[in-house]
Image 1: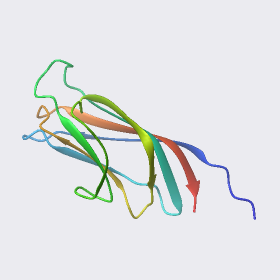
Image 2 (image 1 turned 90 degrees about the vertical axis):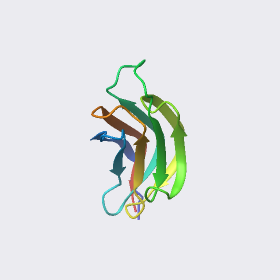
Image 3 (image 1 turned 180 degrees about the vertical axis):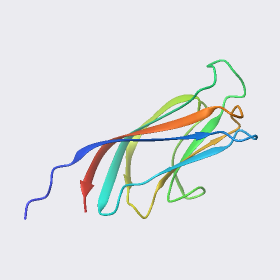
Image 4 (image 1 turned 120 degrees about the vertical axis):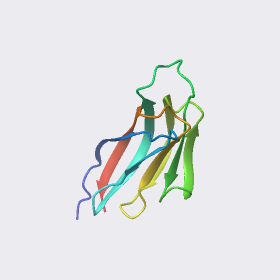
Length: 115
């Protein structure tokens, strides 16, 4: 039996930060797929010099789960490295201390394969 070749992963999600500057995006592959995330870009719609500057944390499996990336510059940052994501363990991107009402977006790049 031949194993299918990996496909390009290009996934994204957005959230509007609440009154406390908090927001969460959860991304996971569909059933029977696995993601190998190699790049995670995050940004917000706030001006680059506007304060407060949000922090961002990336967890595997849920907020408070295994932390796989973080940045003090959650309004424009890139994390690289390899994170294996299963459908049962979503990748959760959390912004804290951002500008309320700004839109935060995460873009994931890498490969995806069938299990």
